[in-house]
Amino acid sequence: MRFLSILTFILFAATPIIGQSDIIVEQLESLKKPWTSLDVNDDNFQFVVITDRTGGMRPGVFETGVAKINLIQPEFVVSVGDLIQGYTEDKTKLEREWKELNGFVDQFEMPFFYVAGNHDYTNDVMAKMWEEKFGADRYHFLYKDVLFLCLNSEDGATALKNPDIGDEQLAYAEEVLSKYPNVRWTMVFMHQPLWIRPNAKNWKSLETTLENRKHSVFTGHVHRFTLYERNKSDYFTLATMGGGSGLRGTRYGEFDHFMWVTMTDSGPYYANILLDGIHDKSVYTQNLLAKRQRMDASPPIKSLPLFQENGSVDKAVFSVENPDTEAMTVKISLSDGEYMTANQKTIEQEIAGNGTAVVEVPITITGEVDIKARPLRATVEMGTNDFAWSKRYNIFPNQKYILKTKGKAIKVDGDLSEWKKWQYSFGEEENRVQFSIKEKNNMLYVAARVKDTDNQTNFGTNLMDKDGIIISIDPRPIAKSAYNPKKQEGVMRGEWVALIGQPTADEFDLSYPELLPEGAQGKGKRTASGYQVEFAIPIATLEKMRGGKLTDMRINVSVLDADKDKKTLEYSWLPEWNDMLVGSGTFFRR
Image 1 (cartoon, helix red, strand yellow):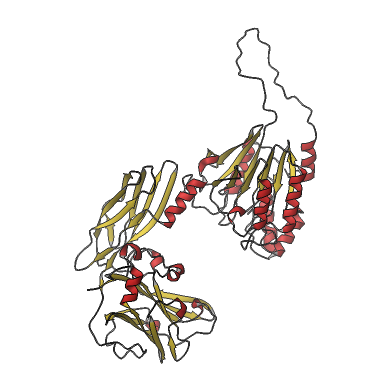
Image 2 (tube, one colour; image 1 turned 180 degrees about the horizontal axis):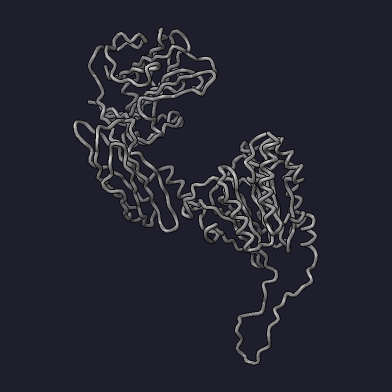
């Protein structure tokens, strides 16, 4: 059945219901009775909150949720948005998506309340269609002395850009709150958890207004359940009911569910009804989220880099640090690589609170290792009964590179006459890259010759808009360099170096000089077949970045091949550092 109109619902809620609220039972002569009480919770009521259907939609899940909600018959259902895929101005497509969604909504056997999400309210076309279909993008209603306030966090069709409630919406919400100051509870619904958005100033103002009243806030958007405690109240980000999810379970806050809310005289009770079970409101709390974020930022389990030189590697090694006072279980699951076999597929071990351990996994190399071959893969998981954190690693025995020191002195002028033999090469024949690395006179030198007959350098101002070569150097100890995710912030902080040369003229210098460390220099020249470069950086500068004597450093060489009509292609000597082949390209000084 189609849901009741908001007006009808408000009138219904405000009209006294004539009916039987007492239990009539057979009078028994005995003093003992087969019941505990006849005081009915007649002021209680239940409603359901449903969350994201789209953003990586998985067909069939939302419909299953509708059917299960009908089984338990709440008074009504409220959405927190992302009902259609949206993100388009194609009206035909949007009409088709809304028709499909409303076909599911029609199956609800109780009223349903729409709330706009970023997938539903992305641009002016979609905002206008929302108005045509639903009238208001913010509204409120009362039921049994509880105020329900539905807001639009996509105000002004902001989508993901600076979401907030606008000035007009703020004024509306504050007027509603002032009109109903003494309701027994206020329930607020919107799509995005604006309290985590630093620029959502209007929401922060509204949150201040909410401080002195009993209230709860329900949102979605992040596809992970988290309970926040703010203003001495419960603020929720719900997980999914069909939207994209890793579905790793309650220990990750990732599951398909709806929230069942029971309103009582003492306040609301919350039950997370998973489509395959029921959990209470603390299934995944803000503290658990913070713990996971800390472990993401500083992984407590690391796959130690493996280096082989004139011999074989016979084990993979993991270092483990338990950052919590509570004991955690570590589980390592391995799948074989193309030339590597794990002799033990699963290892499980308990680590005491704040304890450390080294876990070794015996492996067998079954052939000549190729850097392009599929590596041994390890999934490491660490957790307790109610919490889990995990990460994946690629296990690969790296070649141990020794830094060359012999040869003539180098003059950084871009003509490469001092370089007689190329040590390394990569790329296809039409875009071959040859390069060498050596140390001389307390300087680290890199020279490269790039084959590219179509130099493109005028598409824009961004690095990725032009042809060029990038020499990535991380001089920090292996314990840090091996795990460098190659984020630009690391260059800004002086953790690693990016020496960039782009053939913008017949002769050119290092690009982005403002990001270069002390003493770095470079020169390049265009050639008939492409371009060539020479770079240098003082060993003393690298040691300053390292904070001690330089015994090793991690190096990779990447080339950008720009094309006006295509996405810029980036290819590298070794897999990019963020591919997590830990320690790849580590050079050792003699």
